[in-house]
Length: 225
Image (tube, rainbow, N blue to C red):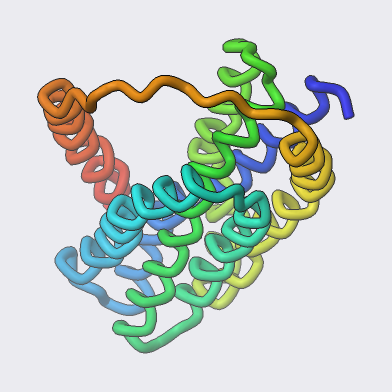
């Protein structure tokens, strides 16, 4: 499989999974309108997706640093879509939080292994990696459109339709996963020198990302209300 084809399929798959990062915020007005959720209850739903995803993603990163898990890419994509689909039809608030949290786990599980596969497919090309990243941004941006075309027409009862992007993404990435898995298995890896962690710089960067995310997620979740 050519590099451009692999990157294109991985970029589309990245878009399909990142739809669910934006879908939760796009669903907030429907939760408020149909279930009379307060702003606090609605914010907890957004929190369930973003906080769970943020906490478990380093864990998946540590696991994929030790072991190659290419199967995580299609499986986590389906998990992300399934969580959102079930969260919309569940009338129980606690179950809704759980399902949305499961979707967050799926999104978190995708990114470390997805990025590793993209690096392998890019063969060191920064342009190829940029296209992979752009796919995720496009998916996030299209989330309100996807939610509007389904839930906006039929209400929360049509959230099961939101699993379709996940199925498309999983199917498209399967051939890339198979090819790149064989490449990794047959290639000889070289050890990279280990340097000490720069915790000071890491802490400052993490603080900057956290403060930016507060404004970004907060506005995205509540500006429509």
